[in-house]
Image (cartoon, rainbow, N blue to C red; front, side, top):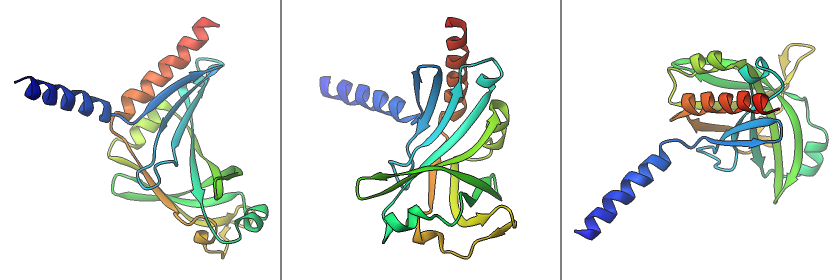
Length: 190
């Protein structure tokens, strides 16, 4: 009987911990909401709130990381074809292409880590965008020449060996609203 009680308790606790992979970190004057990737676990989806004003706490700045191990990475990353990358996402059944920016790259373990700027959106707009999704889906398609409005003819996999990732949206809306509330609380405390 004690064993059954232990197993049931363990399953209840475990399922509640797994219900949301979104973590909130309050540090300095900002709040970070993040979740690990499903394809590349170490590549997180990050949402940053700056506690400068009520308006800044309503703006969710989004970033992703991408870890890549590719041939001749040191040389390739020194001269990236562009700081813009054409990226595919999903909104329900609709596929949407948009541009992400390369914020910075750095050496990491045996490869390179890139931080991409995804977008900055009002909290409710972000919730509405993902309301028909069960995952955030992003796929790097091509480097992009912003001035000439065209794709650059270089295979993206020469730079990013795993060009796509997904992040679970379980608990996303609640976590996003909680992170926004933490941001507003930082303002009240200052």
